[in-house]
Length: 139
Image (cartoon, rainbow, N blue to C red):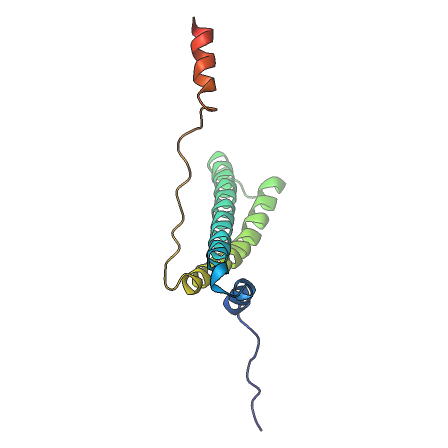
């Protein structure tokens, strides 16, 4: 009996096929940006899910500190615990997505590793107009 080979494409292969659909050297920039955008988006999803989970964990920890001798948990806390466990599964999938996006980015950019950029720490001053308004109002 012969064994059938697994021909199901991997997530990386599917994502790479979608980006490399745009062939030609004139589309190299487009392919690079598409791969970078995918990494950016999946990284942000990971960060967002982690923040959500952290908040829920903090809520559960606060409830536990306030109720150290509890024998039965509050319905809200039970729901938060259930949601947290569902989010653990989501986080694993989001991590898989991010890892695949990073592999695709590396393939598309000929070996460059994706590095998330830090969020901006400065604010725009509205082309200097906010400072002018503050100066005007201060006088």
